[in-house]
Length: 260
Image 1 (cartoon, rainbow, N blue to C red):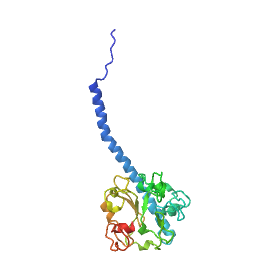
Image 2: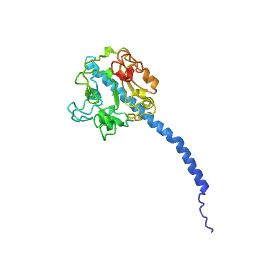
Image 3: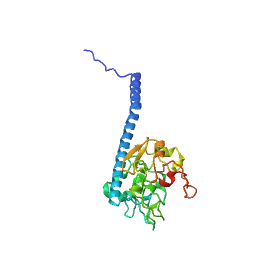
Image 4: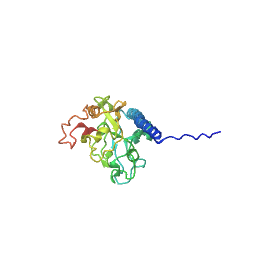
């Protein structure tokens, strides 16, 4: 009986197989990446929806008054460290926490941090996300929340003005943005948002979560939509010119600069 020798693949056959695998990978990898991004966008929208509901429950319990405004605080007025999770930390997310009971809701799945975290004064050097530093991946608009003199603060600086914001004061609650994702894609394209050239880090590919004054939320996907959103309680839209910009210290020149 004769012995049959197994036939091996030729070099050309191997190259053809490798080429086919490479083509399939080139087709499928972007699809997988897009699916992951869509899943993260859905998770972000779910987070913002729950935050919106929690804020409305807070308002109902506090005589229709919006929570006290805080943003980007990492120190107490006396200089004690107050990063997210530290006992002295203050933030809007802390005030509405009893209504969600899950701090992870304030973390955007795409929170990749940003250059501001490295600042030794109002950042958290060595921390990788806004959520881990400031307690939230989302920016609560200062024009939509109550400010209390010597209590409200941003970047560790205390406000010296009092202004209570009540739900009845919103001229267009269903259109008024009260909270947004910290990093939106168009912030890396247009300098009018104040994130360029050094503060922007890309989080989302398509857009970001938005919460409105009536508690509903949606995922915004364009700067045109973002600019048309109402951002001030009196109905002023984000990209409309601020008529008092020269006297109120608004370097942006738009309502975005005074109410976002």
